[in-house]
Length: 332
Image 1 (cartoon, rainbow, N blue to C red):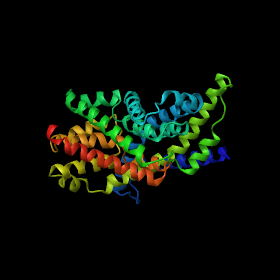
Image 2 (image 1 turned 180 degrees about the vertical axis):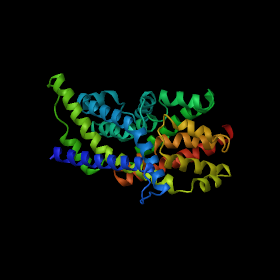
Image 3 (image 1 turned 90 degrees about the horizontal axis):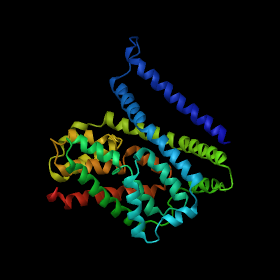
Image 4 (image 1 turned 90 degrees about the vertical axis):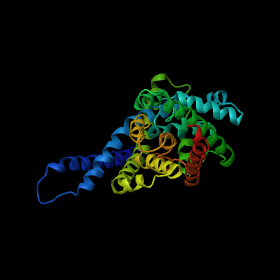
């Protein structure tokens, strides 16, 4: 059955790839059939988001496969503190040291939760991983003219916000919040691999990674297409013109970060281009919100977690970032 599903997924991805290839060559076609410029722009944005995200998804599913095969529930119980606050802080520190992207963090978090990591700890890891890892901080430092102020504020405020959101999750949500189908799948995948040879375990890890990739890739494609669709047909100029005051400019930049769905390793260079238009607080809203949750990341989360939880997480992240930055605005 799995082989059939994989064949369907591969065929679907092949059809999408062939269609995009035809679109990419269609600009030089001078026949009677002409493709609207907006559709070509949609194709270009979609391809750029997909190409940017796929390497990180591949890294993410490989790490998820390693967790599934080589990390046991006993390991998790030994590593995760029983105290909620300590578990959240530790998970945020691990995330800050872990070079992950929001594109590839969802499969890793799913495997961690299925192995027994508490939901609040997993969310702390998910929020800090793409935001304050060493690569992101280095790119932010370079994007803003080798100035550590924005990079430091991004790191410090992002860490504080991640802790606050993860603690809120520990009080508001119980259980794993994984979808029923995901719970059943992960329950069936808990095989006893400790007695197998390293070669067999390595092969099992690759199989799990492939399963994870085909499970996540279709939602990545959907999220990338939706983000490209919004970017193509949303009046971005009108959106930017509404950001006059500190409140509206912060909301506009957060909305822009969500829609653009940029990779966290590159978003600082886009954020820096707005530094002459918007205040520092709004730029920080852009740099912090996007890596935590964006449009394509939301679609991928909806494939794993219950809808109510994803919407709750979205609301928590938006409100915590907004109120934290507004409260600290005079110090920025």
